[in-house]
Amino acid sequence: MSSPTPTPSPASLPRRDFVKTVSAATVALGLAPALLTAADTPAAKPAAAATPASAPSSRKRFAIVGNGGRSRMFQEAIQNTYKDHAELVAVCDKNPGRLALAQKRSEAAGAKRPAGYAHTDFDRMIAEAKPDTVIVTTVDATHNEYIVRALDLGCDVITEKPMTTTPEKCQQIIDACARTGKHVRVTFNYRYAPPRTQIKELLMSGEIGDVLSVDFHWLLNTHHGADYFRRWHGEKKNSGGLMIHKATHHFDLVNWWLGALPVSVTATGKREFYTPSMAKRLGLKSHHERCHGCPEADACAFFMDLAAESSLKALYLDNEHHDGYFRDKCVFNPRIDIEDTMNVIVSYDTGATLSYSLNAFNSWEGYQIAFNGTKGRIEHGIVEKIYVSGTNEVQGASGGVSTRVIPLRGPARDIKPWEGTGGHGGGDKLMLDELFLPSTPADKYLRASDEMGGAYSMLIGAAANRCFLNGQPVRIADLVAGLRRPNMAPMPTRLDPVPMPASGKRRSRD
Ligand SMILES: NC(=O)c1ccc[n+]([C@@H]2O[C@H](COP(=O)([O-])OP(=O)(O)OC[C@H]3O[C@@H](n4cnc5c(N)ncnc54)[C@H](O)[C@@H]3O)[C@@H](O)[C@H]2O)c1
Image 1 (cartoon, rainbow, N blue to C red):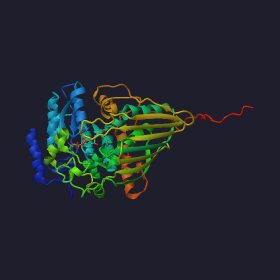
Image 2: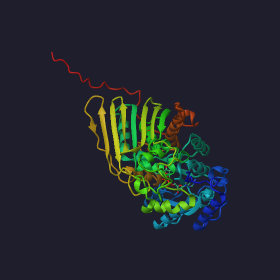
Image 3: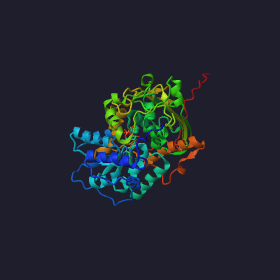
Image 4: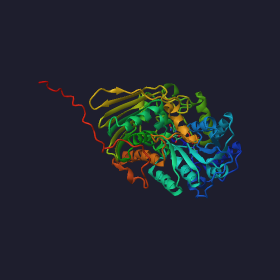
């Protein structure tokens, strides 16, 4: 049984339904009627003259495109914490219901109601609302369209990870940056989590010398992990699979931690847990279309009750009649084409190698990583809390951080982890300060990422996806032209002397 795609394009929806959907939104939002054709998508429109912002207020003007779960963090930041410096002037979405919710949230926050625009009116939004910066929080596979168009229309861009999902789309972004002379800010919030910044500090300090290899294993449990298979993420055309959608965070961390660039990738990937046959092995009669109204809801431990959680209901269940997107699709449905078990080997320009795995059906959630250096080893891990996207659960809130430095010879040293509070272990707040305050102190870790950081992390995933299909190693340089080294903090190198380790031999006493 096939289900509707989560983000039906004008071309994929019957024109009558699409017009009905968007005109309902137009009326509901008080928008001017738009010409509703596929040619109105940002990618399809010819470049118009740049529209420089001319805001009377000194606050920076922001527009958010994609008003789902993740956009709330940016909206709240703009309308609460950073309201003296930032202003939300427009919101844009394919789903009129979520667009209206974003507008209502503004009113509830006591902020001016931002103008609302259907996704087909992106250019008009830029012309009328004149944002300085567009924040892109749409489905992963559509980021490129808005990034490129916003750059061409003279705006700055902040995008959620992954920057994009395929090498071809990545090339469009790299070319648009070169064409406009602008940079894209990619929000890799994982870099800012205090315990991960602390790992960067340890590596920069040279305590374990230069890193020759890394062993990195990321586990997703059957709550959070399963969630990827329920949502749009379960289809590669939307998310690029977990190698892109999820692992972009992890590959970016390694690139940044090592201050190194990936050169080649080999990988294997498969899906064995979130499958129709696993539904039967678990005692269900069959897979189904979705949880809501599922005949086997009582028997399935993967059942998600969208109606029972008010924010999920308001965001998704109440708005699915607009676009046919079900937030609670069956995790055993055959429409899923992403992997749940992945192994990747990456070689770096420093000579370091990474052995990485990602598993999406595990008994706990978090990761373990070991850096093997010329002077010793760092072992680090975080056990994360159960987390379901869109709820009030805070990822990483339960702590469970361990970090240990082990010299080549000598006693190990347990390190007290740096701490933070709030989203993503305190990382979100630090990153938001950088995004929305007029100035912040210089960052010795260079955590702010541009399009090159965004490209190098997603290209490892894209290379892995390619290797899943043909088994051949993939060279990053063969995927995209025009890559350059991002600005990276200085790290220990292969040229540094390495002190002879303690001999450990007992000297004779004659
Ligand atoms: N950094 C992080 O930790 C983190 C966490 C969650 C999500 N994200 C990223 O944020 C982005 C959004 O994820 P989410 O969880 O909010 O998803 P979501 O499904 O809740 O929201 C996506 C929104 O985009 C809209 N949309 C889809 N296609 C569109 C199009 N072509 N034009 C305009 N609007 C469109 C949808 O209607 C929806 O409102 C994704 O790129 C995701 O990878 C990052």
